[in-house]
Amino acid sequence: MTQSGTEALKGEDWAGEMGARWLANLDRFENMIAPIGAALLERAGYQAGERVLDLGCGGGATTLAIAETVGPGGAALGLDVAPMLIERARARATEAGSLARFVCADAATARLDEPPFDRLFSRFGSMFFETPAPAFANLSGMLKAGARIDLAVWANPRDNLWMMEVMGVVRQHVDIPPATPRAPGPFAFEDRGYLNDVLESGGFSDIDVATYQGLQPVGGPGATPDEATDFVLASMAVGRVLGEQGAGVRDAARSDLTGMFTRYHQVGEGVMLPCKAWLVTARAKPVG
Image (cartoon, rainbow, N blue to C red; front, side):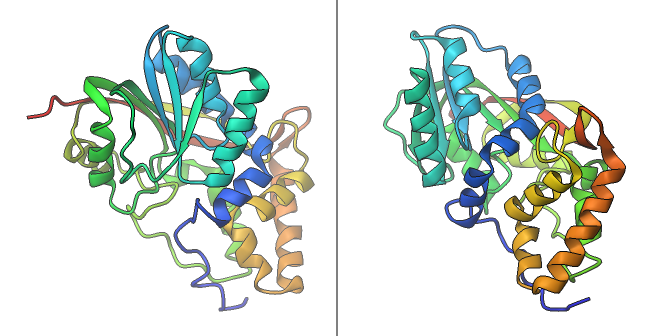
């Protein structure tokens, strides 16, 4: 085991490397989390004419779905910090003839030249703020008083084996420090008490949380163990970590990842590992 990887996992740079990785694997990423997004959209229950802000919209799939629901009398605006993802989202909207619009900006500090929104939506786009309470306060300023927000965030890692099993294999080949609780990243809001504190400090109330549990198709539905391994190495930060250790370490880790994914492979379904997410609803408090 090499010791040189302990500093390799840093904050995810969505405007740079991680955004580029997401774009390069866009279909597999979106297909992998599509069931959770569908559950969040159903819970949100958008109506024609509503104005919706989609936080961390990525490649725009959820924004396009929202735009279709709210119709020409409403609005769907996707907001993301990654320019390459916003470019792809705009191209998708053009291809689909959608009225969805997209803005590239940091939601923590952005000032949008838009009327206040009725709703806010985010499928795994709200967990990466360096200072989350001020960021949510900024978002609250983009919403009408009483506006409803609907967020999907990952629950505790121990119930998300799609991540835990991968990290267990990777740590057999390179030392990676334990994640810092509450630090920006996929599991920043695993602690629901902390999540409540952030939302309340950011200007939201009436917080309600539902649990989503299911099986996550790593690499997308139908992926083989080899394809799931390729997806992890190409799209997740651990792929970069392993690549920095040299071909021998990377090849050994690849073999072990494929073996692990083989245990979870279901014919006709893909590599299916348990996942758990919080589906969060809250309301923007009136100013003052």
